[in-house]
Amino acid sequence: MNFKIKKPSLALGDSLDFTQGNPYKLIVKFALPLFISQVFQQLYNTADSFIVGRFLGTEELAAVSSSGTLIFMMISFFEGLFMGAGVLISRYFGERNREGVSKAVHTDISVGLISGAVLTVVGMVFTPTFLRWMNTDPEVLPLAVQYFRVYFSGSLFLVMYNVCRGIMMAVGDSKRPLGYLITSSVLNIILDVLFIGVFGWGVWSAAAATVVSQGVSVVLCLTHLMRNGGIVTVSVKKIRIHADMFKMIVRYGLPSGVQNSVIGFANIIVQSQINTFEKFAMAAYGVHAKIEGFAFLPIMSFNMAITTFVGQNLGAGNHERAKRGALFGVLAATGLAEVIGVISYFASPYLVGFFDSTKEVVEFGVRQAHTVALFYCLLAFSHAVAAVCRGAGKAVVPMAVMLAVWCVFRITYILIVMKVSGDIGYVYMAYPITWAISSVIYFFYYRYSDWVHGFEKKKKRQIKKG
Image 1 (spheres, rainbow, N blue to C red):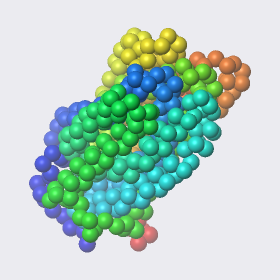
Image 2 (image 1 turned 180 degrees about the horizontal axis):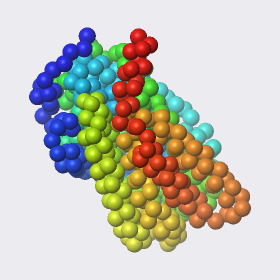
Image 3 (image 1 turned 60 degrees about the vertical axis):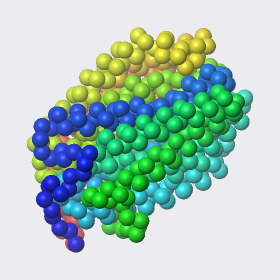
Image 4 (image 1 turned 90 degrees about the vertical axis):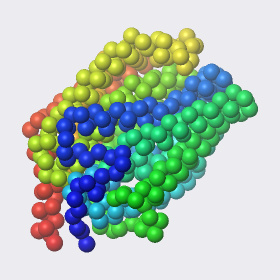
């Protein structure tokens, strides 16, 4: 049975109600701690790469870097699926539907537990096969298998952290996940130094440090959610899959999961082409991914804020407010991305050298940065409009765009140019070219479609069916 309650009783200590107050200030207030938390999250893998590169060498760094896209493809599907739960929780929070929030939260956790177990088994069993498919250098392969098997052994922790963080962010709480991430990230760095620098263990121990740190963050998140006492309080007795809620989570989240996976698949094709070059190119590609990850954190923080803002306000029926907030978020993310791109362009020799000062690695890394950095604004615009679509329950739209442009077109382009020319620069160019195409498509959709009435239309269809 659904019932309504007054706004004040819905608020959590560190949450934000996006349906009232200055929309621009709310978005920035939510995005700022989210940005800081993303920085610390990025430290997980970056600490691994930096410490491995400094203490163990280029070959070990190549092992860690060679297949980061493999992790992204396998994990990002589930992350996209959980975005569907986040959209639902934001929507029910905006509607003041306590029962809906509770069912979505407990179904989300149930799916997370199952997904984490599946990912653990698949990752540990098939890691060698996946790495061979990706043309991983035979010299690097044994080290890469060690690293990724240990990494996937902690898949449950990684998945459950993203579930818990998504639940808190859906109701506007971006501060508490920040504290948990700072704790686990600092622990991760300490363990990296201890395992590798002090004990002298191999590359696998960097993954072990990450697993332990992620486990700590999950314990902290679940402890808070179970003791919270508010609308999103988790009860072990209520953790189960509600069939109706699961269907809606899949409806809203599956397109995002597919979108993430096809992007990951396309990046694996890119990675496999990079892996055909020498280990210096592999190491440089991985280093650039770390640098780009840091550079893009402010933009992704705004995008997460956009999704939550749009979801809550459309759930509350505040269409014009949703439009104003979405426009502000898109413009802020795009402008900030270009500033970061210019900085990355000129600072790339120093940034790449920070991870690995080997001459060849720096040359490859700088060349890639000079090819893509000035086009970050296009990448940001595409992601920002996709965030608007997800918040509006239109996740199929970004899925279709990414599948057509960032997967099919990007792969086709790379396979063709690599047959015509073996120059690695053409592989790097695949990114700005596909960012530009998707940005044009997103512009016309955002400008001319009726994305603000998606929830109402779905409700009407459900009523007619019922």
